[in-house]
Length: 273
View 1 (cartoon, rainbow, N blue to C red):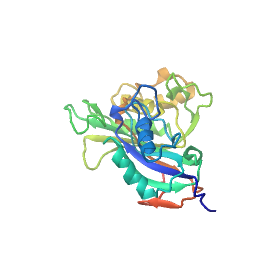
View 2 (cartoon, helix red, strand yellow):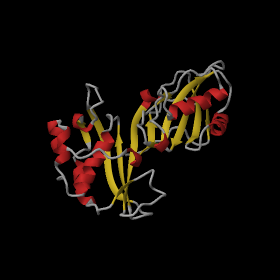
View 3 (cartoon, one colour):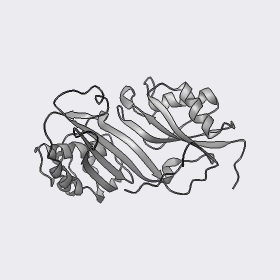
View 4 (cartoon, rainbow, N blue to C red):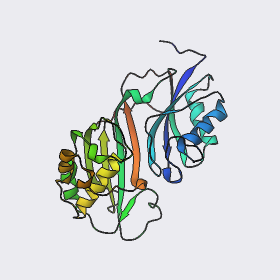
């Protein structure tokens, strides 16, 4: 297979601090990650029409591994896109790597699973270095109880209770490959909840995390997750965790992604859950 020199696709891995944005997707009269990124792409190729992102992260949500594709008629190499876009973007957004792929490449069609991480800070005092990226909790957490509750979420279930009222999708069955609760080795104040799944409903991770935190604080029993899956009632669960603690860590794609140029590392990372 050869690459058409008149049109090619570009696949970016993008990291961003979402605190100052109204989410990823472009919105009229609102500052969004996609809006800033599209402006930077058009500064290099004014003919680019749209961006195709993997995840529509909400306002305040961060990313280390958002995937974004677009088509271009330029011959700019992968390295040129990473370095060139960096000079046109605000400091909160950074392209981390790029691949030259087939035109029209749609990354959402090739997703195997996504990895989200939610960060909690167990501290009665504010930490300015974690204020934008963690949910601070002043009371001690029972992580064993949270792990017991998390175990009920793993597998293929109807997660209709774990979505916001704005989510109108009729198919609500999803598969979670792993839900892990652990204290960070580098800082015992930090608790990380890692959620891996093939697809997610709107606010699904934040509702799950909020419920696990309510279990860890003794406000709910560990079986609440199983009960909500069985009943489909949002009222059986806890609060929705705030946005600032959530980060899209990575998106693992299948192997059916022809790549002609990549910079600076391997474009498709196989990540075992």
